[in-house]
Picture: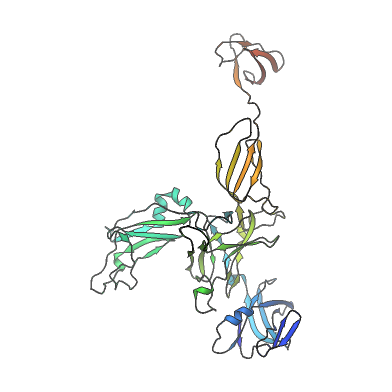
Length: 473
């Protein structure tokens, strides 16, 4: 909340046990939310750094505070005091679920694989094939993403949240250039060109350019840039401004920091970055030093989409949350509270799971001793992400080396396999005949359900399954 007024300055400054009076530069402010009916009082946390860096409004003083969670939705009165002087009434604020940012649903799901520290943001980037489904014969060039999805469902099972779109002008044999001056530059204005909708251009919406000629939509091909682990959150976000650096005015409504995945049991928090950034120390990586924003977009009123990349090493159950400046912390839809992966069985709304990328070798000795390498992420055995165990068939595989991205285990010996044959009763002699042998032989059943005999030179144990069928092993 922002409180604007005059003489909102403190003279009392305290660091540890040292108190000093500094005219107008102190920070002894107290802001409280009070509920008159129940006499409940909730402190509002002062943000002095924002006050120091914020731009003054017409020379007036400003105070900033962050509200804490309240026990119920209602209208709350605001009181503040300076240097422990009598409280001043500063109006009221309505704190309701209808005014809060919301996490309504996630796509493709409210879950993601664990991401190792050693993995770059760009490690799982790939491109789809080029798509050229439509032509311009009907004066419309329609390369919408839903058409591409229908034509190549297998690819879009992997590229479910494209992070970029590339449009190539086949007529000019170059990257498509959209008009930035409403056709005055002789270029076309696309109906849309984004990762949510794809590309579409219509001749009917073009207007004459500077030369008097009306540009026409070219024939294009389209491909999408994808990241395997990018998730989309749909909900009420109020903003499409990424952060403080996006706007010269500090007070503009914006996404405050990154969204988070947190555990209530131990307070661990991990970022859900809406940037791809491999930093500076990434060697010859082609995207080294780049900082690419993922989509943050209002689609209808205050509703929108946040694309994010979870940066979580430890598998388990988490709660997704984000904060929009001026609107506070988000509220998750209750139907998302469906993961029970924590020891206390409290429901959480987001799950991080281990991922297996490869298992090598594909063959080994039945007598054990084969070193099997499992590569992936989330292989953490520290009490937070559970324990790590490997079995091959019904046999355990002894772990000899474990990192968060690789497990090496030694296989154990397989028990000697048993052979089995189906036998049948001979209809003429009432003896049991083994039909698969090269040399015919006969078994005469005793009164018991089990008989011991020899089949050729090998002992056999015969058990009746039904009146005319038995198994020999």
